[in-house]
Amino acid sequence: MTTLAKTEKKISAGDFYRLDELFLSDDDRLVRDAVREFVKKEVFPHISGWDSGKSAPYANHEELVRATARKYGQQLSLFGASIEGIEPYLSHLNFTPLSHTSYGVAMREIEYCDTSLRSLASVQSSLCMFAIFQFGSEEQKKKWLPALFTGEALACFGLTEPQGGSDPGNMLTKAKKVSGGWVLDGNKAWITNGFADVAVVWARTEEGIRGFLVEKGTAGFTYRNEEKWALRAGVASSLSFSGCEVPDSALMPGTVQKKPHDLKCPLRCLSEARYSIIWGVVGAARACVDETLRYSGERKLFGKALACKQETQRRLVLMLNDTENAQLVALQLARLKERKALSHVHISLGKYNNVNKALNVAQTACELLSADVFTFDAFHSGRHMRNLNVVKKYEGTHEIHQLIVGREITGEQAF
Ligand code: TGC
Ligand code: FAD
Image (cartoon, rainbow, N blue to C red; front, side, top):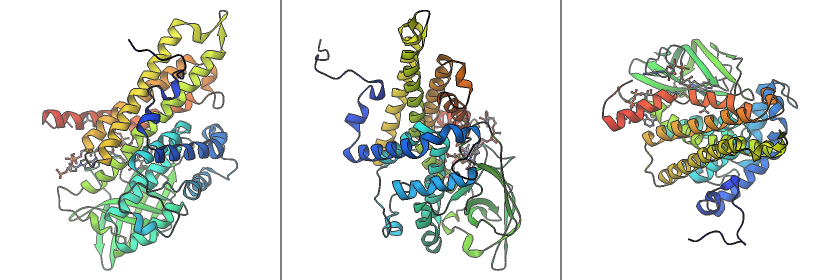
């Protein structure tokens, strides 16, 4: 049997199967290192404070989201960078296209710090820039894509409604055609960054569901930020449209699809964002493994470090196992995406699997750490555990993703 030669490196929990070393390209690793450095310098020092409700050095959470978006734009050139074909709209800026793998790695490194910060990138890039690029008019693309890429402008994506939730086809927000434009009436719930400069709003017309770009400050469009106990470094809002008149140019022409295919455009955007979650949560899980390993090595109880106890080791290994398995799934989905062979059903199983695994890891971390895990500033794993419960709920709940995969393999619709 071949074993590790004595001169070989000790296997590290940080990259146990050497996946980064062997599966990532040099470019992917460059992106990884740049994002890791950015996160360490710009956001890690503040994250516990932001999670606890403080916003320093910014005036409030809206300002901290805006400032962070600008930093992503200026220092990382990340927003929308993996959208195939977007280059002509951004080539006058500091734009370098990213592979889907590189983009995934960036999401992993950001969510190592916090899910809200990854969500900010997912919503801006995968939901909004993707929607505007795929379905927008030339005028809309030229106006919004450069500003969103640099982070000078923020966008939000309004699909979910209070009565609709998992079933967005049950949409009550209406867009009525009037001379020269449309009038929107209805409500959206739990919209990340609802205070943004432009909202991608999905609304029902007489011919089917369509997407509109509604600018902040348009008469009849208001928002209210929610209080929440997770994703506290980010903002989620309810949106209200009451006699909100927008010009004809607000309609995204590519969303004009015949029924019953009129939900397909927003669903395509969801697939992009779900892909970034599949990678992101690997980062959250890794952060929990790292923190728990460190603590178990340092904390002495009954005369020995906790890392010396069989039960602690067994659970640390389960955490590592879940994290590495999730990383393998993310890598395989990236391979499929690079080959244009990734189905939304693959994404559903990947999201279900990776969020499940990351949440198990975070929950176990909270059990292995001390009571200080219930404070805001002693550990990071408590925050990841709270955040990952949201990730299990948004972008399609666990049950919805099981039903999507169940329908695919049985041919039976069970929603
Ligand atoms: P269904 O019959 O399943 O499909 C209709 C057509 O659309 C295609 N399709 C998709 N295409 C691309 N990506 C997807 N994810 C797709 N899902 C479906 C499908 O192939 C079909 O095409 P065709 O050519 O045969 O017509 O549609 P349905 O109306 O029955 O949908 C059912 C269901 C439950 C799957 C769908 O409504 C759903 O996914 N519900 C969950 C809602 C959800 O996830 N909302 C998320 C809101 S955004 C958010 O949470 C942001 S959080 C912040 C962050 O991301 O960080
Ligand atoms: P419901 O749909 O009411 O689900 C309740 C429960 O019923 C869940 O457990 C669900 O799995 C289960 N269930 C549903 N259908 C079935 C079924 N057929 N069989 C069995 N069980 C079922 N939305 C946006 O549009 N844009 C955003 O930017 C956005 N950001 C968000 C940010 C945060 C912090 C949060 C919490 C949510 C966000 N959402 C956003 C909304 C999110 O997508 C929804 O919360 C999600 O789709 C679930 O809808 P719901 O909360 O109404 O739950």
